[in-house]
Image (cartoon, rainbow, N blue to C red; front, side, top):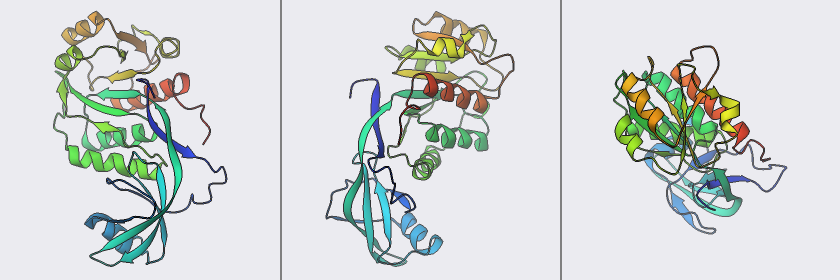
Length: 260
């Protein structure tokens, strides 16, 4: 697939006959004719929350083998098994775009994970800056939020999530990727113009509430792969800036032209 893209799935059947079936993320391999046993949280979800029954059909995906149609052959409060019947969708290419951002308040960081997953980000790389006010990040909870967003949005791969890293350390490891820096000072090129020259692989970089320090800004300006962009005349909140820049990149360089 090359360095610029990663797995993405779409429907081969334009009628989407199975579109209304519930979807579940399952970590293990998926193969026709086999049965998979579900963990406790998914058993509770199917049996107690959704009140599903043996014989009901669901869709299952694992981020690697596409999407599969399955039938509940066992379902109780302690056990659930799904018999895999056939593959519904196959993997295909997806843009390789990373979102690097400084964590903000818990509910707004959750919003970034949810909406950026819906918008097709490939990786999340949290960064810690001098003005990051909420550096602690619950990675397990964040992964659960990402998986839930992927389940709900018909996405079949799961974005990677990395541990938070200090900005200057992170910057020293970046090479071979366009780093698109949303400059809150408004000194960058208008985003649409700059993004036309920034194909995948690309990283979108969003700073903390309060912005980068001068030392951090100087380091970004001095990096050969950084492209400074402006998101207009207004100062945007960090979560608004992240999703705005990601939307613009997907429209210019991403997969928004792909029909499901």
